[in-house]
Image 1 (cartoon, rainbow, N blue to C red):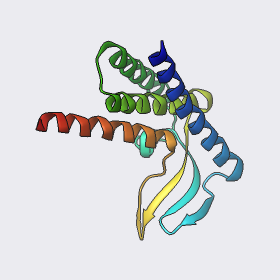
Image 2 (tube, rainbow, N blue to C red):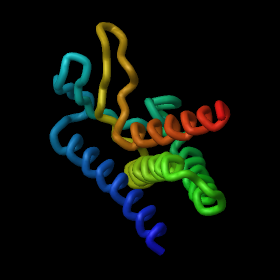
Image 3 (tube, rainbow, N blue to C red):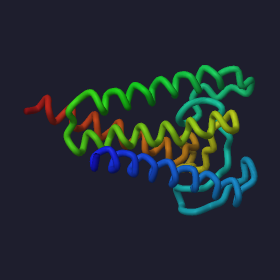
Length: 155
């Protein structure tokens, strides 16, 4: 029971932090307005109809329903993996980060048809596509799983 409560509270914390940060960006910025923060980091409000890091962001919006379905299936898959297998604590954190981030972006896509992105990282003329905290959580979760898998293979 304690494990279930930890998992739920961890995922809920990720979702709340993600949704709070997106609502703050919506409140403080107009769409495509850029706000300088650091020499390599700006805030910009973008509504992304594609997937993470603006991939498949077409203005038609025809991809919204398929992406909602794919995201739901991905969330269900990771929940299934979480409960069906034994994981180390660090692997479990990685999976929970992926689930929480995916749910955060899923909420956006269902409620507004797009995902709110607001973090812009760049160096000189190189710009990484705008992203949000949910994208970061998903990325960190994947990195954790990849590193733990590589370390297992070394042993």
